[in-house]
Amino acid sequence: MSSRRSAHRGSISACAIAATIGECAIAAQRAGGDLGGIDVLARYDRMRRTDVDSRMLAIDLFNRTLLTDFLPVQGARGSGCT
Image (tube, rainbow, N blue to C red; front, side, top):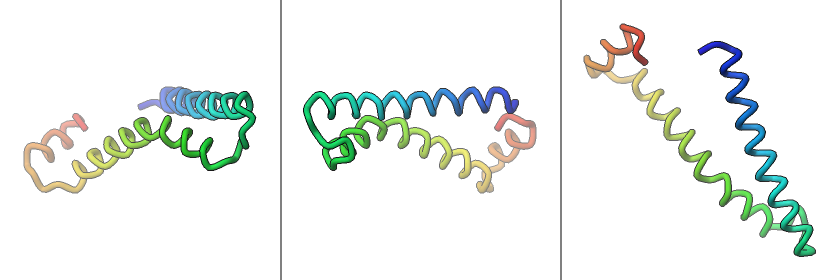
């Protein structure tokens, strides 16, 4: 992957994080809540959890392919498929 594509993905992720923070902050402000309160942080966590968990799963699976002794996976990795 080129560094340009990697930087683009990073900026998309950063934009999603900033948008979620902004959404939580605006909702808290409109409700008269504490921007750093537990309820706001819990809402942020719920909103981001799916993305974070899916990324962790993908990275874990990729790392496992690097450590496996399963011959077809080693062959695919050796041919540049992974």
